[in-house]
Image 1 (cartoon, rainbow over the protein chains, first blue to last red):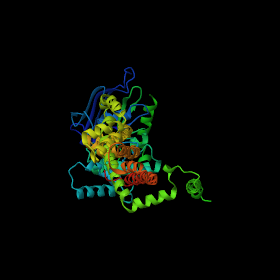
Image 2 (image 1 turned 120 degrees about the vertical axis):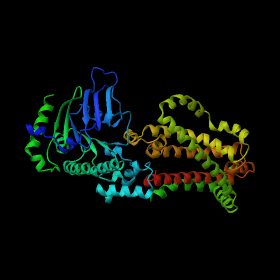
Image 3 (image 1 turned 180 degrees about the vertical axis):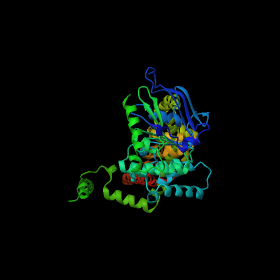
Image 4 (image 1 turned 30 degrees about the vertical axis):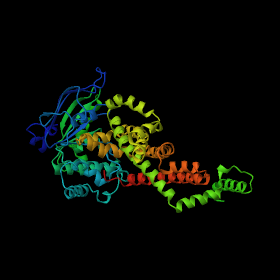
Length: 269
Length: 249
C-alpha cells in the first residue's frame, strides 16, 4: 500500500520542532508498578496537524491526553511543549472534555461560559463582548446565547465547550472523545464543523477517540494504542484529500484500506 | 371544607375556648390573659410604634450578626474545604470553639463591648459562623472536579478560582447553611436581649413580664413568630433569585 506513505500537506510543513512531544513516557498509578498504564511512549505532535489517537478502552488514551494538557505528570520520561518541559496546564493548550455537562458552568449562560477565558485577558468589556458574539455566531449558537447549558442539547453544549476553548486562542486543542456521547448524526455534523474550524484557525489538534472511522476521517495522522500496558502500536499518515466529505471520503478505497489495517492491528492485541 | 379552613379549625376552637373560659370566669389565672386582650395590646403597641422600634433593634443585630458570621463562615469554610492541610491543622481548634454555647459568651461580650449593638452583633456572628462554615466546607469539597480542571486549564489564580468556580458552584448548599444560621441569629439576639442587653424585642418581653402585662407579652411572642417566618421567606426569595439569574460571577 504505497499510498499510505503519502505525506499530507500538514505533515510536510512540520519540519521544525514538534508542537508537543512525549519522550519515553511511562505512567504508573499508585503502587501497581508491575501494571503500568502507559509504557515507553514516544510520539510527536506536529505543528498545525490534526492527530487522531485511537485505541480500545483501558489503553490509557485519556491519561495520555491529561499528560499533554499538564493535568498530570508522567512517572517516567518527559512531556515537551514547543521544546520546553510541561510542568502544569497552560492557556496555550485548550482541553475539550467528553463530559460537556460537567465541564460547563451551569450557573452561567452560553455567552457567560464562552467569556470565561477572556475575563483575565485585559480586554475591555466591549472587546470581550464582540469576541464572544463572534464565537457564538461561528459555532451557530446565536439562538442559545442567553440560555443556560442545561437548556441545550448535548451537541449544542459541546459546541459551547469548543467555543470556550477557541476563546482562549490556544496553540493546541486537546480533545478527549468529545463526540463520544452524541448521536450519530450530531457527531457527523460536529466532525465537519471541527475540521473546518481546525483548518481555519490553524490550530494543532490532538483528538482522542475509540472510533476507528472517526480517527481516520478527521486525522492527518492516526496513532493506534494497545492496552496492558498502554503503548503505541502503529502510526499512519492518512493522506486522504481535504476537505473531507462524510459520503465520498468514507467510501474512498484508501479510507477503507486504512480502516482494515487499523482494525487488524487493534484486533491483534 | 378547604385544606386551609380545616387547618384553621383547631386553633380557632382553642382561641374560642380560651377567650370564653377567661370571660366567664372559669379560668382566673391572670398571667395568661386572653385572645381579645392580646390582640388589643398588640394593636396598641403597633400604633404607638414601640413594637416596631424594638423589632428594628432586634432585626438589626440579628441580620448584622448573620452577615458578619456569614463572611467569616464562608471564608473559613472555603479555606478548610479547599486545603486538606488547613482542615487538618485547624479542624480540632474549630471543633473546640464550636462546642462553646454562644450564650455563654454573653458575659464576655458585655465585658468587651458594653451594652448596645456591638456586643449583640458579635455574639450572634459567633453563633452563626459555625453552621455556615460547615456548609461551606462541605459544599466546596463537593464541587464538580471537572470544573476545577477547567480552572486549572485556564491557569486561574486562587482568588479567581474561588470567585468564578468554587463559590458559585457551592452557592446553593451555602444558602442552606445561611438559612439555618438565620434561625439561630434570631434566637441568640432575643436571648441576649432578655439576659443582658437592654434593647430590642427580648428586653421588651422582659419589661412586659416585669410590669405584669401578659397580654403585651403574648402579642410580642406572636410578633416574633411572624418575624421569623418573614425573614425566612425573604431569604428564600434572595436565594432562589440569585440562583436563577447567575450569569454575573
